[in-house]
Image (tube, rainbow, N blue to C red; front, side, top):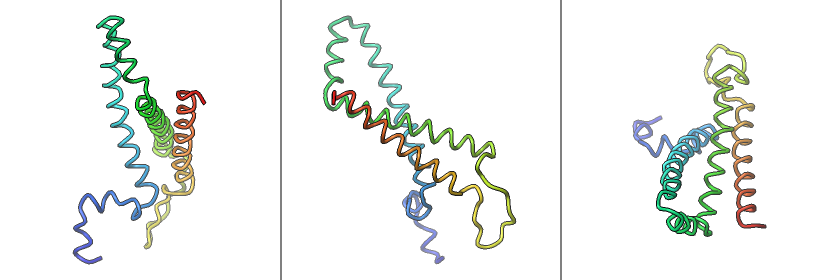
Length: 143
């Protein structure tokens, strides 16, 4: 590596092509966590509209019951499913399940923890999130 390759900054760190699906899962986990936090805050605001009475509640329900509201809710469903499934995969990995046997770190080092089992878990989390999102869209749009 040349000296310039070490100066990529955040763009180099976030590059999923350089590190593989593990980096994609890392970023999706962080982004889905922030998205769910934003949804949690929005949900508190939404349910507090009941204090404005029936009129206030109906106004807010009309606002979020449209196409945009359904799309946002389907994204929330996908984030929730991905975050849950990937979190279970991470917890199992931290517990030593599916990480492989430790080996002597000879060059080129191939970490045993980044094996096909964890990659299957990442792909499974993405696929389950996509299926849940499509199901949520089908239910909300009535098709």
